[in-house]
Image (cartoon, rainbow over all chains, first blue to last red; front, top):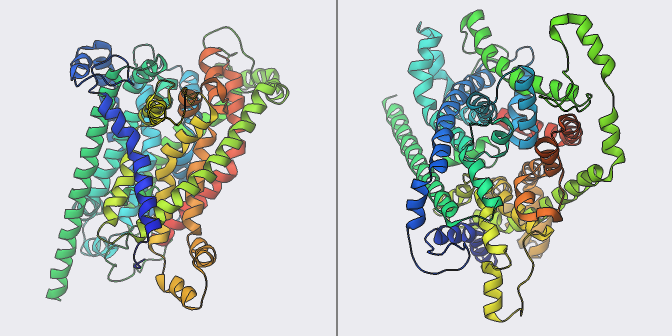
Length: 273
Length: 333
């Protein structure tokens, strides 16, 4: 749409974005509040950040959460990329619609359903709840996000490159690593980041599948919030928000650069024809 | 990447990438990646088996547990099936099954009222999210081209922040001694603090706030691709602006509207964090009921029955969403 934005458009953008950002900004501001009460300003202080670092329970939760996040994001990226290759490149096969159904359903499925169904599976399998059960649960729902991201990347790039390589006798696995993988790498990285974030943020599924020793960071935060919340929670939330922001911006700059580079290369290639 | 991500989650549509120079010639039913029959089989099997094992089979177990009776034990239900005894064990388990948990869901007001209030909250908050999200998406689509990627990123950023943190942010605002009351008191609009937190209003605000990106992004991507000559034509022919909006813009934005509504409605039906933190005891959504039954009462069979009924309610919207997504990914290829 090219016509000039009206006053109504500008107002709705300003109001809309204030609504989206004001609560987050307030939360960040109050992480620097000196007082114990989270709602009354009484002077600038960074003591909650120090307190947070000395809170052993909290740091332990951070460590568990990071471990779960790193493993489940990596596994989800591998499985999700395989699933994307299946959906984008393997044409029809027996049970394809069930397969794509199982990819799309977890994207909208309420978390309580995913959490409960997995814990019952683990109990039926006689598995003790803990690191592995949360890790598998996170892998299962975040791989679906990876799949859709990588799939849209796959459908975007020129398939004739793969065909040319294989026509020239390049074995499929090598074609994948030399031709396909470099093309879809930004999608894979974005998928990994989203999977990692989903795992880091998840409260509900982790709560169902956690054991006594594996209290993740969101579970700790939830426990504190239920008791009323402290500026320490604001501090850890602020750090999480800043990490996400930097990650998202960095990733988008990287992809943009890669895209520009690819367009440039294509132009050069076209000039040589 | 950002826009890629969301395009994949069905949230935005990106500009079509540099067009492929020629259409892939291979018909759809011949794989272009003939990894050999075995390679192909393995490639399909690995993610397929994972999803069968950790996504589909669990629902079978939930269904079986929902037919069991609660006991004081670990796990807190009679063992489903003694697999070691083969068919005999299965038969014995089947004889113990009963629909008593489902009967409870119908008979006890606690449960069916929770379903009804979830449905009501999900419907109403989807509608409200449309009303709040549409002007934002519309404004984004009409903003100068160079601004649009930044605006899209600004909608996506909160999407990467956890629901828990975003709900917590609202607690500080809505508390009786919170910022909103402080502001209203100091301006003199009210004389004594309002009771805002732990009301259904707080739940609606929380849901609209957290789910807004899911609505704005698909709407924006539909509106952004809208052909302005159509609205101009309507205006040139003397159609008043509101009529142009209603009869031209809204119908053209329909795919985005449907996607957005499904992305909000389905997860809100089972929402736990927002009603729990912002609604307190004033709302009882089915996600909270399920949580309490599972964690506090340790009544896993009734929690399973609640899940099965919730799935039954959601299966049609989920199938609609799947069809929508499949069609979209086919359009892409």
